[in-house]
Amino acid sequence: MKRHMSAKSRMELMQSLGERYRLGSRLAKQRILDEFVAVTGYHRKHAIRLLRLGRVDQSSVKPARPRRYGDAVGEALVVLWEAADRVCGKRLKVLIPTLVEALERHGHLHLDAGIRARLLSASAATIDRLLVVPRSGGPPRRHRRSGTTPSIRRSVPVRTFADWKEPVPGFVEADLVYHSGPNASGSFAQTLTLTDVASGWTECVALVVRDGALVTEALTKLRKVMPFRLLGFDTDNGSEFLNEIVIAYCRDNAIEFTRSRPYHKNDQAWVEQKNGSVVRRLVGYRRLEGLAAVGVLARLYEAARLFVNFFQPSFKLASKTRVGARVTKRYHLPATPSARLLESKDVPEEMKDRLRLAAAGLDPLRLLDEIRTMQRHLADLAAGEVPSLVSSRDPELDTFLKSLKTAWQKGEVRPTHAARPKPQRDWRTRVDPFEIAWPLVRRWLEEEPDRTAKEILERLQIQQPGVFPDGQIRTLQRRVQEWRTAEARRLILAHPGLGISGHAFAETTGNIPS
Image (cartoon, rainbow, N blue to C red; front, side, top):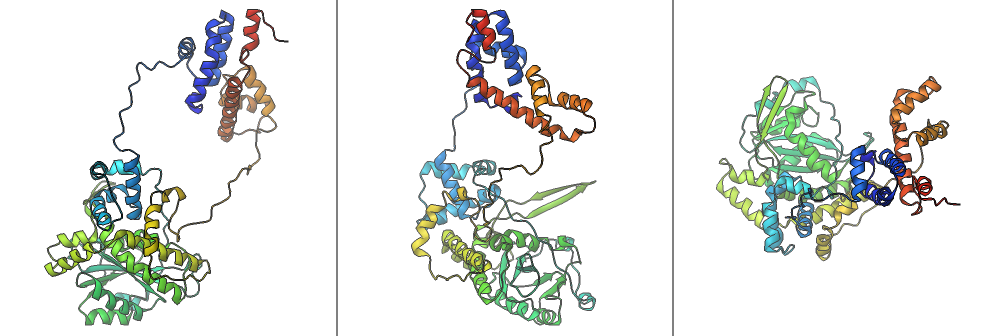
């Protein structure tokens, strides 16, 4: 029972009984000790020491060391975590220097030298520990769709996950994400996702329908904005990719076109991971249809491509070894896709200069504000409302920055993921199996308070065979725990002259209450 009572309750009970225990006779002490042990669950010798002393001996307790990361560091860390779109501690650890510099450069953040030093020196484990309260979970994953006809499939070579080795930037994996919601019938918006295997650079394009011609148009657009030349195009076996239009486009533009094996999602692990961490994280799982939804998705991806590729560090697998059934994976330090491209020897210096120039002019907070605004519009469209698009968010940018300190208290902040709160349930969903037998159980507990729930259940099974199965032991344990807690509370709130053994103590002193 000790583990179920709070320390404060045990302390109050000990103070309430301690004085009467020390002043009572031998018989009174014995009765008070019996009840104290039964309610608290303490060992009898330990209970005697507590009641004699009247307090907990703190001489052997070491004082807690002073906090290194105070509330100011925690508030600043929450702002940085929100500005980074709630990444994990290991990724945020790598991003903090870049993010702090970018926010200070644009006047969104002003840190004291001491707080700045502590933020930069905090480990990934410390960051996770400081963000335990404001951190929230992620959305569930979705199933994949079917493939295409065998004739077209045989004309495209297969590339497995083990065939990538160490490719240069430009070999991408592509996949299509459905925004159909719970119902896959009818027409709905699609997202074409491209992920560079070498750097993790990710591009997303909104498509109004699933069509091979639109895929080629999207590739033409992306080839103009991606910071590398498109060398390889690896897809799954969907008909929007494996068709004559896309095959001819890749052949005419000297793009190596490959496909994964059917029903082997690991062959496209890079883009499948981005489908969850980028597309589903930004858009959610609601149904989006029509040109209005595609237009909002396009604006969302314009801001998201810069935010994800310049301010979202990601892991990259370094090695994988198998010993029997145990697989050990090693990862490189988290880095943003733009940082990996800057470190690559296969990217021209001219392109690296363009990346540096683009990074110097980016405001992560403004990008995140644009993402939140477009997510709000998507949520309105999914709910059947018509949003009014705005062209600028400058007047509300300061308000958005101030809201980052307390946004975690509201739970989910992405409008595309926010759900209506469910009413709190305060009623039973099952019939209490011990409702009829509880008066008998309570009488047994009053006569023998130290009896365990297991012993009581065995006694009930002997008296009423076949009524109380062994699987109801946890229910009975909870009921017994509630009774003992109520008894402890009754002792604390009892009359000062009386208690568990009030009458016994009065008998020993001659003061019998009327």
